[in-house]
Length: 119
Length: 111
Image 1 (cartoon, rainbow over the protein chains, first blue to last red):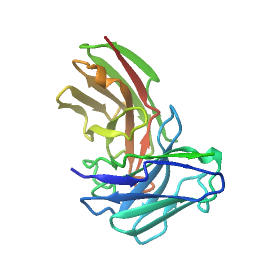
Image 2: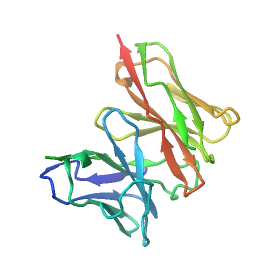
Image 3: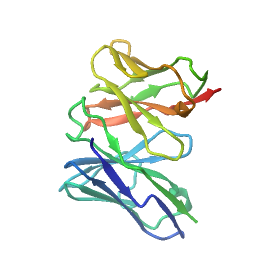
Image 4: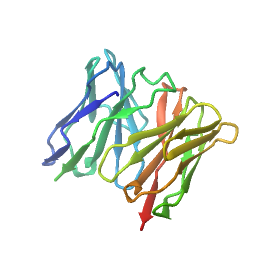
C-alpha cells in the first residue's frame, strides 16, 4: 500500500528557531500533498495544500510567511516553521493521495506526524 | 459552511458492538472516510463510502446516506485495542478536493 514518510517525528527547540519538516511519498508520486496541524483533543486542521512545481494553497488564517511550503519534486514536500514560538507547538501531519485527491476511492495516506515543542 | 459533527466520547464493553454517528454539511461531496487515531499517532484509514449503503470490512462497517448527510461506523466484537479516536472526514471537490475532518469521537473500551 501507499506509504508516506515524515521526518523528524519529534522536535524540541528554542523560541525563534526555524524548523523544517519533510514529507515523502515512498512508493508513489504525489502531485498534491496536504499539511495538517492538530492540537490536543482537537481535529486535524488543514493548513495548506502543497502542489508540485507551483505555489502552495493556504487555508484562511494560515500565515504564508510563517509556514513555508516547498514541493520541489513528486515525492517530497517540506514545511518550514519560521521563527517558531511556543504557540506553534503542535502535532503536524502530512498526507498524500495516489491521485491528488480527485478519485474518491483513494483515501489520504498520512505520515506518522511530527510533534513540535517550542520552549 | 463546512461542518462535520460526531459525538465527543463513547464508552463500550469489550466484545460488544458500537455505532459512531457522523453528520456533515459541506459545499460538495466526493466521498466520506473513517480513520482511526491512537493518541500521539497519525490517523490510519479504516473505510470509505462514496455511494449510499453499507460497506463491510471485517469487524468494521460504514454506512452512508448522502441525502441525509449522515454516516456511521459500526465496530463489532470490540477489543481493548479499539480504544482510540475515530475521525469522520469528507472530501469536498469544491476548492481543490480538500478533506475536512470532524473533531473525532474518543472511544473507550472497558473490560
